[in-house]
Image (tube, rainbow, N blue to C red):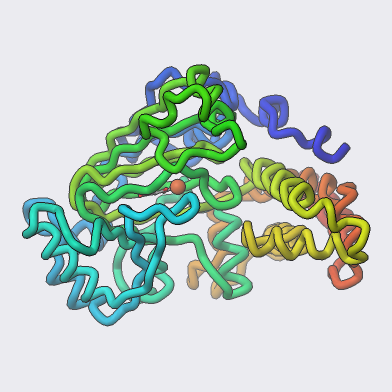
Length: 427
Ligand SMILES: O=C(O)CCC(=O)C(=O)O
Ligand SMILES: [Fe+2]
């Protein structure tokens, strides 16, 4: 019932979208290129890309002022190894081996940054071959480790960011990353965490992206329902292993140059290649435009866990709790934490609407300052979207089976407060 009332369908978005685009429509193979900073507003991005869930590319003008674009790159557009070593040499960084497949990903190890840079220099000298394989530094939380460094500022288009707002608030994690890899390094086929949006800016180098709109991945599954590791592998042509492959559309292909930012919409599967030695910065984020997609994804994940351990349903009296535990370890969140996530986001907005901002909050570049920058209408939009998802969550049978006494305030009270805040703001 909850699923039906909250299907991630075009209808859900249509009333919010005044653009000519249709949500989730099939691509024409063309991806819009946003050239000018001055003439492209937050509202343009919201209406034409966030709401319709369409990819786009921002020109290098959007990253012109970034410290990393000045300092991390040599005059001839290569990574400035000396500068990077001097600033980050002692850091420990996560490194994946692109030549080895472990389940549907690459094995990762933690090594000192200076060791990685030495490897990279040797790899280049050796004509991009190495006995260690092709190593790719990825998912490095550099901003968290070096907050004082002048690296980049998040473009306004990406600042309605509930994921980082929530995980910063609880101080556990964040979804802001740096990637660095030699020509030939690549990221296997995947969709992003929680089906979030992502933006990815090339500090130097070039990337090739293969993008598949939501739903296309169904045609790329093998006969057991598993997604491919490498969507370009010749094995996909084998009809007895990948029976629906011939029905799939070719991917939308993007060539991303130095300085450009790619916007990857929610739930679009993708595979990415570094065509040259490349450094990129990327964020994952969720907001009022795609939180319903995240909620659909969580329901699908729980259903998959339930199918997996269905045989234990009767013998186990805390089966529903176990399902939540497994879900949390697989996806990073469970239903009660999802409730807390929505609560933190809602309360920040209610606070801005009810109390405005003190000078301290503005000066410190806090989440509330970001909410206030986007304006009251945006805060009300966020609250309305939160009400929709919370209403669906509260009615969800799996959620209702959990012990909800620890939730404060209880869902009904939060919903009541939210609706009242929306009504007052609109008065
Ligand atoms: O740049 C890469 O190798 C992968 C980036 C990615 O998957 C993303 O930004 O969502
Ligand atoms: Fe990704």
